[in-house]
Image 1 (cartoon, rainbow, N blue to C red):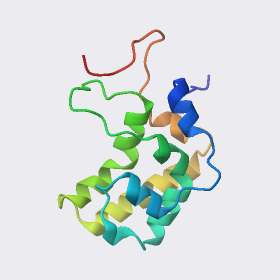
Image 2 (image 1 turned 90 degrees about the vertical axis):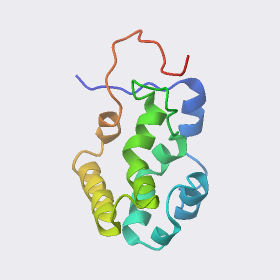
Image 3 (image 1 turned 120 degrees about the vertical axis):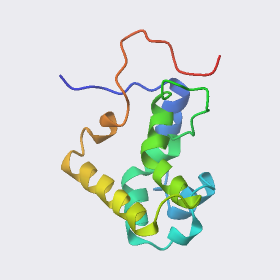
Length: 132
């Protein structure tokens, strides 16, 4: 049985294909925590090309989201967090780029279902995540 990620209407509207693919510059503008010194890295360009639609809906989770949040928050944690950690100096550049490359390879191995693996499973009817 295949798992299907259901998005709320507002998130689905953001996830619809844009008129142009996401660019590295758009990623840098959307997420200021991503260090600018990675701008010209080929692996970052490939990462943005592969995950642009998910990055467009990604949202940084609030500290009060103890359960990890909804799909946009899971996308942020899985796709942007490593870049942000490098940005604050808590990770090395080469290791960060290697993690991006590993995520790209994982996506290439299972392109039809990779995005589903990013979102934790929840029982039907579970209330949306958020801060009270």
